[in-house]
Image 1 (cartoon, rainbow, N blue to C red):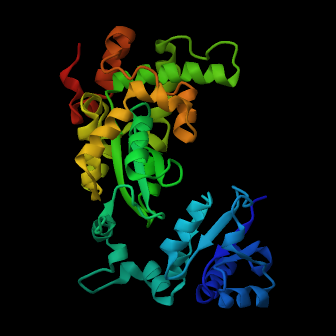
Image 2: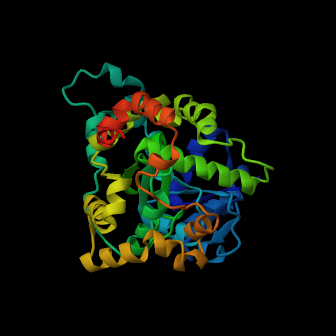
Length: 372
């Protein structure tokens, strides 16, 4: 069972504990430990008073269970989150938001916002103002990204997600699954709300090529899982018996309303990168993202990164490396990455159905210009 830990200063500790007791029924006896900075007497005293074990953060490296949960809070929360990420601790929650929600004024506004008679609602309850505040105001420098920052790669599956993440890993100097969030379609609504989100990019692809690539990935995955034969023997079976259901029955894909997804992203300053454009000029695609995120960078580094992370190199030199991306490469996650591969692989009746069923999505992104 996962343990619950607090990495907070002494003043924040009491507020977080009060919230945990009221909202989650968790008291001091349920807290596995107070993580604290060396010499933080105030936090140690709180832990001693409540009989919660106190552990210096310097003692955690290599011995912290990956499933355990940490709540971080305090005026220096960015530093605390960065230290936890550095230690490989991923299940981190924003304790400052817990404290904010516990304030009397916050509780009142949450329940009484419909009674407001003044001209200006609080910013946190004005969606337009809140989204404007999510736009990063301070630039960061490639290779010197603060340790607590998160970057979101949001995409339609099989749209170059691993490729984009590999380029971002290299030029930003961060690691996938530590500071880069892989997010598919509606996942963005949860990921975007994270206060340490610095920026997101949305990747799209011609739906006909998505179907072809997803089918081959399903065949590969079935083999890895030990099936004696693929569950879907052809693209036709895959399309009718899985793909359409996965899209239209899932909130993750807005139950098929993919144009809503694209409009939501563009309305919030999220750059759209079409797979086809990234294939034609990966350096330009990467530079577009960095500019949207206000990441200061050297143009030569962008071109070098695009070259080193080309599909050919990813399947070769990077294939033997360590980490999340290279594990995906070794599993065969990246296939050929063709643009227009559907023309030779997709049955005509499936291509026609996609053109009709996903007409709005295809038109919104310019994919309906090539119907043959």
